[in-house]
Length: 161
Length: 217
Image (cartoon, rainbow over all chains, first blue to last red; front, side, top):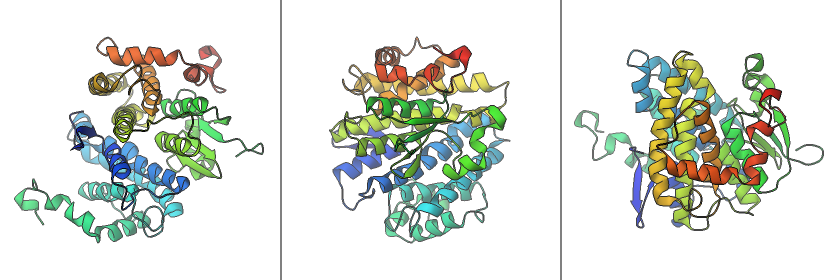
């Protein structure tokens, strides 16, 4: 796919972030990233897909290249606002402390990076209080911090935490 | 559910995402009712307040089942798999499951969203064909390569899986946009094999309650 991420693990290489995460969940099941109840699992997957299929692909690097430099900001903002409108509405019925109830799930793993993208493209988050609240709660957790773009081996010096 | 207790599928005959779910329902012999949502008529029936309350993404498919409404075709299919497990749509082995999900996501995240109705509206009518073809060629290049190492009779090995449910509707989209499929022999072969199966036929866009008369099989 000529894309990241790809994970080389257990003798295979898996592309597509959600396929990777589901594989990790099935082979390293604790702590869980998907609830036990099938209906809650469906909500987690739905929210994850809203982000991973409905928002991010439309504002990724290759699409932005195609819309052209002068249109990029407007395009990306439009895509994200539209997606966050829908997401905010969904979260109002599924969220507890986190996206679905009170346990961290795959949906939360999708939310935080997408909010970071929105901030990078200067999308105003005021219309999305549930998204903002959950994002803030998640960013306080260690796994969301150690994995942050500002703390990676390839983070440029000027962006390093 | 309806009074009869049947699940309700909100679907558009031509929506490739809706078709994926229709195939799953057919494969698992789940009886359901269709509520057609016309994505073009009246400015797009998916934008009605009524439908928005049901599915905030304002998209099809959405499935009302077991007292809940699920959006996003793969989330729906995985729910059906977990609650109506036979026949299976995901292999037992985690590595093969990963391959099925990866292929499904290549299509459902990497290709289809970039050529769906709302994106095409935004690129503008004069650019639509070129854009859609570019997106699909690029995606099919990658998919063809992946399939060469995963495919048997079907996308992953010799059992029909969620990946196959994604493939057939996407190939139909490619044909609609006049993408030449000659560079993709594996995709073409698998597509042809799948189209011979009953669940892929009954769920076909040309055989839906909302199929326009001139396109009906």
